[in-house]
Length: 78
Image (cartoon, rainbow, N blue to C red; front, side, top):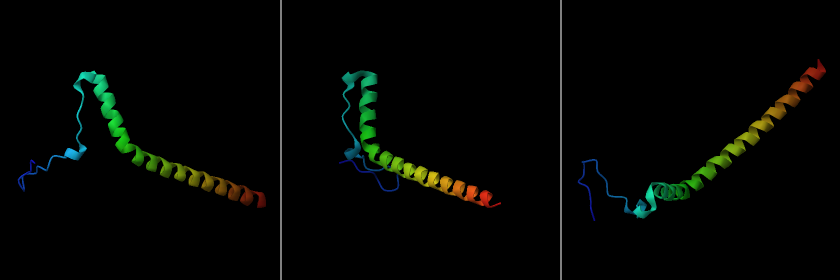
């Protein structure tokens, strides 16, 4: 196994994160293959961020409605 010398700024090769690329696929095929691989890794994080943003939207809509009702109540008294 290849290892780096300490202090040179080089790290061990990330063999767990590498994959064989079928060069017979052509440029578009390689791009699609890599895109599928990256999305498979990133999708859980994306779904988590999407859920968090959706929760924020729901909370903010609730706050807007609450303030609108408060505003209407305040001006109905005046």
